[in-house]
Amino acid sequence: MQTTFYSNGKLLITGEYLVLDGARAFALPTKFGQNLIVEAGSNQELIWKSYNVDEKIWFEDTISFKEVIDNNKIKIETVKSTLINILHEAYLLNPDFINNSDGYKISTHLTFPKNWGLGTSSTLLNNIAQWLNIDAFTLLKNSFGGSGYDIACAQNDTPIVYRLEDNLPLVEEVKFNPDFTENIYFVYLNKKQSSKTAINAYYNNKNESLARNIADNNKITASILNAVTAKEFALAVQKHEIHLSNILEIQTIKELAFPDFNGVVKSLGAWGGDFVMVLSKENPTPYFISKGYETILSYQEMILQ
Image (cartoon, rainbow, N blue to C red; front, side):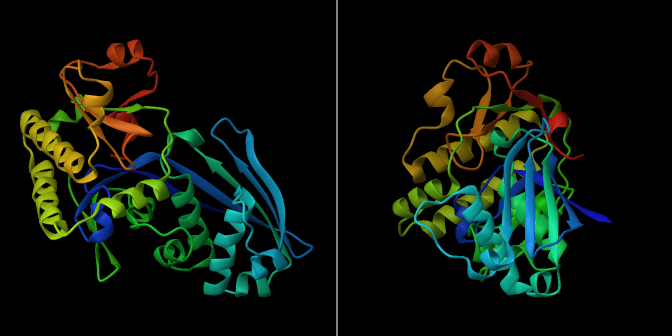
């Protein structure tokens, strides 16, 4: 007998970095995500296989229950050591999955290319939490850290506003389906960014203006959610880019890479990598292909409706 779990991928539209300090962040669950399939095993071990969207194995190993329990730290972080750390933290939250089992055969299956950055880790964490009936936000906090907006996307099928209050996650389902979604596209930059690196950079630049920055972010987020026309949406998105650019002291992605583009380009998540959101009157595919970017998805192709 096998049991299957599934979690949605994510895109963070507003509140990058500031969400870590309580700002309201607008996020969209994606049509893409990850499955986790669990079967009974033996020998007090987990036989683990992780498949990319093309069904090719990108990680395969056998992990003993003892390795999960001991979680011996190693200096060089590997996929296996990271997975063992997640499973160890899960074990601390629910020891029964080790103590009352002979073993497991586990496979994970991405429905998006692993390098897209739509939440390979967050979907895995949420799937493991579902499997073991533990709190995914606690598992995240005890393993990777981060705001948790990606876990909220993994668990929800509608647009959300996410924030932390007293370090506790608050998730609000919101409606976002304006007519101008037909003018929204997502372009993959093929520059994987490390969330940990980006978070560290944010904290290094954080100053006493934090409260004002959060208030400004919340106003802009409200403007983006309440936009009725494409023009209102575009102006609010541009304002958000300028706001974050000033906080992070780095150029916006449009200034840096697409100054001649007739439309709006917005960074998503860790600035400078993975996907950007594009707002354009015309289909921007020819422009971005001419610049060497071949993965362009419409809003309808990317986002859960």
